[in-house]
Length: 466
Image (cartoon, helix red, strand yellow):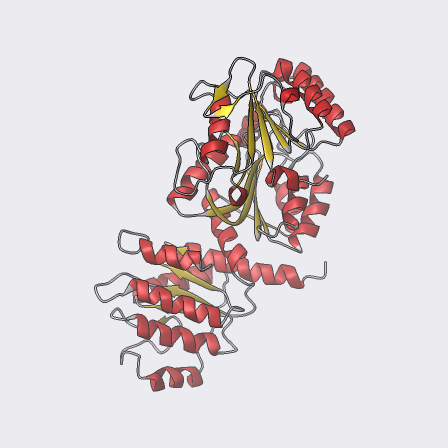
């Protein structure tokens, strides 16, 4: 099934749109009309046709309301259903008669509540499969596509547009991730809450994002997978095109019991998942910070094809970075005498600079010194990537340093660059500039080293014959 219609519809019907503020039916409609419930800076309204459906209202949020979907004259690319589970089947019948092109069922009360709910879910799924209408859900938050203004969800806001797709088996977790992403200027190409996955699930969306031009990396929150063999087969094919990073919940016996009570699904032994992920070239994350740190590097940087150099204006920060590199087995290069001669000849280095890796260019380093060091190191064939550390001191012209790093990165696009800068009041503008130009910034040396290590693993993946 072609899922483009879900992510780039020209018309959306909200069946169960409500006049009651704070209700799911109201919030979904407002997300489409306004961009999000809170009208945040990143939010953009849906510019296609919006059709609220509610038999008890004439107008909601300035949009004409229809009593039933059959009254709508135009074609409907996407129908979002948010009514009581008992009447969802009847609504779906109306949608098939109307020849709606895709459906999201937000409503809960299906397989997650027991046998009767499961039977109803199976009947609805069979009906839609027969009609060849793709369906997301039921019991889901919905989906978000920032680039097209599609916030077909009851999430509180829309994140910034970016390169990373997020597929989640938890809707509530998506809400928190969006809140965090807005604060941290982190962008997504799409966010999908898969819910009960009665038709479309993780596998189908993995295949979709593998061919999506707006997506450079795919992140997953997984509680349980029904068909592990199929997942491995699909993940291995997709990971050959784009990196996949997953976090698996339910690693302990207590966690597995929590999943069973949460979704009714079987979590499975974590060691089995860990093995499956590795065999499928799926990166494993231990926490959400790690999930999105890895994704940010993998989405924006080329794979690491050799050894790394560190440039820093703080000796202590360089030592910490070296320790983390040793811990994670990230190879640090030994600077050649010919490179040191180039640095000396530039006339820009402080007389006390370290003359080794980490290259400590001393605390009073300005943008010109950073530019010189970064430029010379990037031109050396034996240096495959850089971790650049900027500590904020009275002489640190952080915005100009950012501009110089961007310029050097553009001249050397085949080598990954990650930057470390404590994110505070005086660095926000520079960090935003760097990340807008696809240079990831981390607030800790350990996070940057771990992200660079994932770029080394990506190179191994891409060159693997298995």
